[in-house]
Image (cartoon, rainbow, N blue to C red; front, side):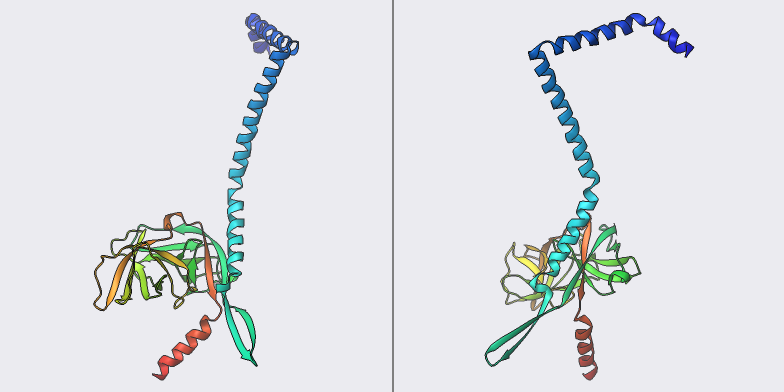
Length: 277
């Protein structure tokens, strides 16, 4: 306290100057309408800017919650798509009795680990068997296919990315429905894939969309990418072509795991067929 008093005493002239300066400004602004209006406008502008910055900061803090909510909403809407249902139609006496049965269920999850710069890339998500995820399920995001589930624990799952040398999925040209197989390119470019084994009867065009065929883990019509080059080497009686992938794997934050409710039944029938052969 003694040092504070000494400091004030030493610089009393400066503090008196500050007090008189502030008092004069208050009197000047208070009793002059133009200066008063200018001061109010300036203070409002400063206050408004401060509140705007605070609002932006608060919005930034809430981005995770908003992203989670958007991902859940996307998954809910995807579950309502017509492509998620199996249509069982029976004609009786010229009356069509149509029953919609859900075939595909989408489980939203957040990506908590991801790689794109290896020959074999994987993702980890924050959902597991307790949320209904099982090995072999397909995985997609709002832009297109991502990969398939290969390891599941109670609360987490590991996904084999499309960017993996062993990943292969059934695909087709969107325009003429010619079937092929999509896989990662040999140059390990995370933005490019190869559509292989397409019939020579196909007449593909650069920019044509490549989608899922419905013959693998995914519903028909899920985006994969667009043809970017037709001049890759042919495979004998089949065509190979370069595809610009729709998904930027380095920016993945949320995915949807696809539960095909008829998968077990289909696999059982196909296994029985192979056994009979």
